[in-house]
Length: 120
Image 1 (tube, rainbow, N blue to C red):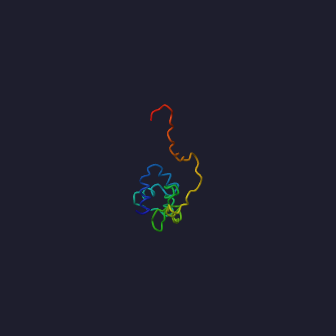
Image 2: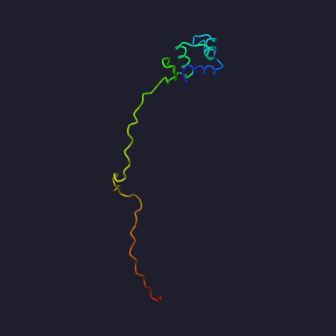
Image 3: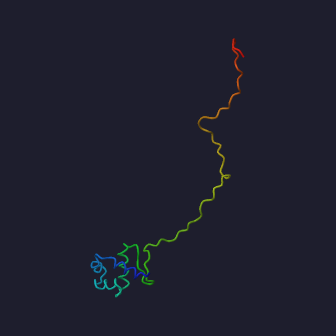
């Protein structure tokens, strides 16, 4: 769809304030109405002002190609390279001292104590 057709649809959908918009754009209300319904044309400067008014300045009309385009087009940025893949073997071994309770080695079993008077 061309930029002119899009702006026509914007004007058809805009029911309120069309007269004040025509005054702000410097054209008559009849000219704006004729353009909205496909029986008239508007100069490129008026179409540019209409696109800016409709989008709040984020879209502009390009008369050379009859299209709407973003007003502030950001330059493309390179994504670069992602991080290197994780290699578990490449990680250093942790030799830091342990904190907290340490495991205790079990002691050798003690021989049973023999009491006098007990049967074995």
